[in-house]
Length: 511
Ligand SMILES: [Zn+2]
Image 1: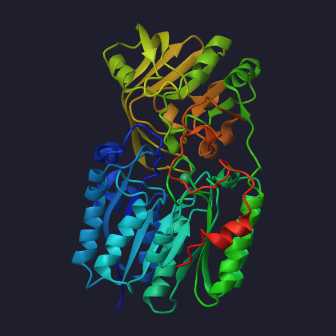
Image 2: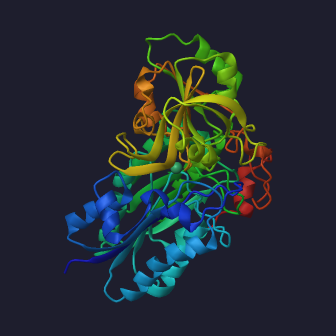
Image 3: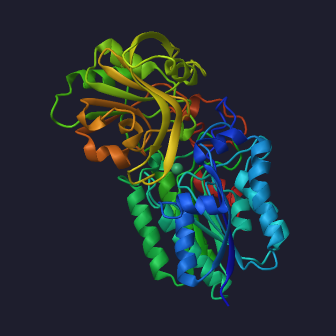
């Protein structure tokens, strides 16, 4: 008899320091909250967890009941209203189908904080478990930037996380989780997930999987997964440091059965290596002035100098309206350049009334919280483009998926073309510029807001990539943020922590 599986995707990465709460409208915007069939049509063939679940469903002949797919751009805490309206249908469906489903597959992020619950995923899983009981297999997928809690490990049997940053293995992750779910539903395996965590905020070695020690840890994890017949998945989570919650930071997960103590020791050993590498910095963060000077000097004909603003990354919950890098570029006289996005709904709206070619005085950016990344810039700008900001990605991360900046405009200020948008999102696909008449490949300097994901689409066209710190909310030095709820001691807020003593005394929450 083929199995019936209930699935859903519900994801948010919450920056608890953001002043902008993430409401239901943020999930509804940009077609990122879709009911079952629409979600399958929009995401079922793309690089998504859902596509991976569907791959497993086809292979094993499942009847898949997909409830919904919902995600919002990273931002402040998810409002309780939004959480209830999105978790509600998932729990209701589990209740309704509890007698005819054999398993549940959920595509989650792992760093969701709501206004009421510090562990959004743990709360969702608690509610689902309450209706389906303790024995139904539940498989979940997580982002590499998950802050994995003891509750998630205790409530889900199977956890599989992305292995790449830039994240390019969503579908693979969904398929691995689905394949393990099949084996659990068939009674072939009875997996549980072990966790080793650390007294640190994350993200370990910047989370980078394109270079540095993470590559070696991933290789060790793959080898362990392959050589141990009772180890089904080893996941390394870099953590998400911009969350002021009790269970924050990197973790190693082993989904397994059998010799639990030995598998826990393996997880601890990888966690030890992460701890030993805690001072390692793989990225050189330039000042905005130094970055602008590099832009002035960069020769034409070598492919663009790509300047990433690490700190104002809307993909980590920063506001996307920091102005310090743009100001430095204009002051230094960088030409043949583009810059994006500048998240400024008021200016994007204002420019809709103007014709292409008009010259307009604008007060651009810096409005959400000028303490993080500078205040508004008074600029005289020429309108190059304005209209609806919908685009379809064509890169490795969001290829084939439709997204929207909301109302959008492109203006020219001196030598810089500036993309002004309504909805915050990071720059991770060339179509986010190209659709609006900016050709990044033909620019001498491309300035963009993203910490690491931009590399997937922009490294192939770049002459060189440099990274700078604009002082915005996701600045690499998180010790300046007002943490109150994280457990102390914690690195890098505290130093001189004895890991073995910490482990002996606390923090090992084995399910
Ligand atoms: Zn991530």
